[in-house]
Image (cartoon, rainbow, N blue to C red; front, side, top):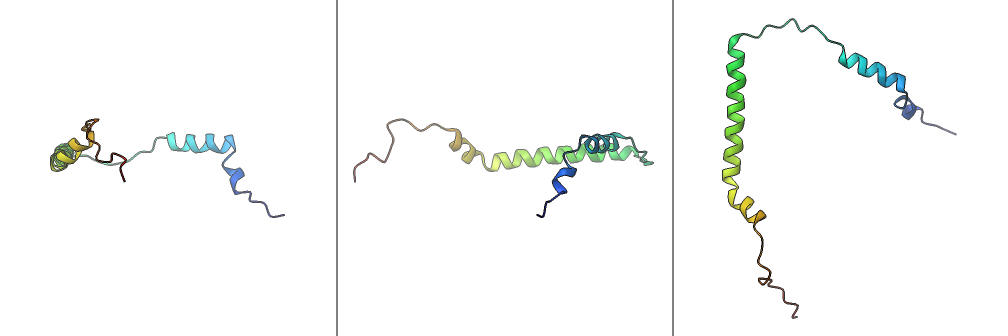
Length: 81
């Protein structure tokens, strides 16, 4: 007897079109970005790149062992019990 009408709201194409139209409507930010903001963004990108390089360098042997193929004859499990 009890029906959940909540799922029917998200199936309406009109509702989706209204939501997309509202998301694509430009809004004025009224913000000022001074020249140092560009250098802050560049330093953040360089910092993220350096962190990524350090993480890869730290785990290099694990990454290398993960992609290294094992020789076909080196199975330690030969089926003998």
